[in-house]
Image 1 (cartoon, one colour):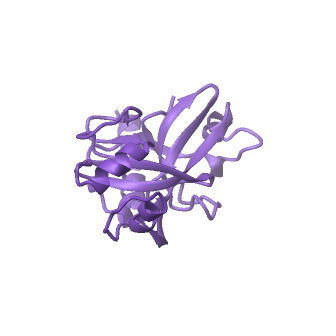
Image 2 (cartoon, rainbow, N blue to C red):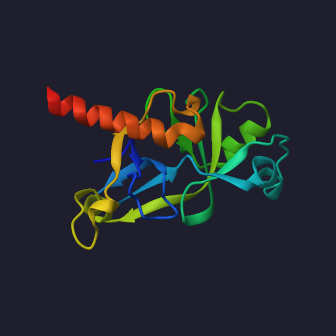
Length: 181
């Protein structure tokens, strides 16, 4: 299963939405999968605007990331696991995600995680869909197949603008090192 992996759009991806995209796959079961597209900032929306819309006070100019076309108003916070709330899902020792307003409140009070990224929406797949994409079997094509690597330690330290290129390079290195052994 691909939960906890980074799904990386192939260089020949023909989707405008996912072109050069990196999705953190949060959960993957036979019933479906979901994740967060983590490298596509929305240049017309700030965290401050989102917090104002839910009557919270925050004065930062951080970007909001459009994490997928499904549930576009849903808020998810990708963060370091130094602060957790009731619905936090740890992806590894350095990356977690929460979808609770409680986490957003903690951030606004200055008691949030040391590093975080506000994401809106999710990327999701129905039962068997992601498996079909990965196999390139009809109705999907080989262009639908995602490259994938284990979620990077310290993912939030990586330059968002360079994340896709970095992940493609790591996926290629991983694939070629295992085939040469």
